[in-house]
Image (tube, rainbow, N blue to C red; front, side, top):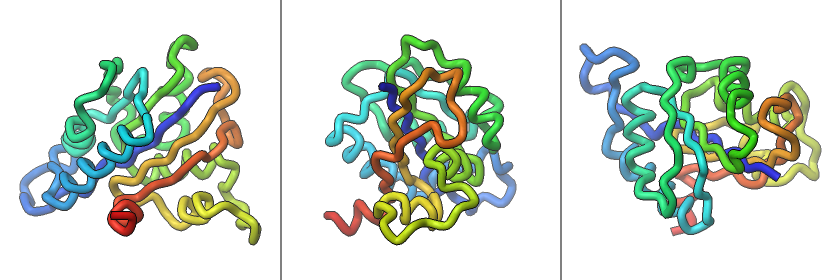
Length: 179
């Protein structure tokens, strides 16, 4: 069984109007949310073997806020993850070595949300009344700083729509309410 963690970058700043989208840093709220998510990930034992990250400044700063790790994961910035869509995200995951048990992807919307919906089999279908609270929250959106955890039964190169089981979905707002 493999583990896939999808983390949207934390809230970024729009203060510097001259900065390109790619160069926008985290704002104070984003730094706090990323630090709080790091605490929760460590508390839950969510320690990836490999991290695939968009090279945008806000994703790299989100990654920095998650450190240090108990074990040093392999970190791989991937150019195609910047504003990636589902095919680009899947292509990156299909390239992960089969020996890797747990992967964290730090990226952007709408791609991460679309991938999470697709993996959970929630894309383009209404939720049943018995749907789990995590599925309902995921269906509503994938806000900045949110984390989706999936178990993956097959290999990375076989990953496709419906190929993941949503284990949990956490947002900074949920963590604030729990404090």
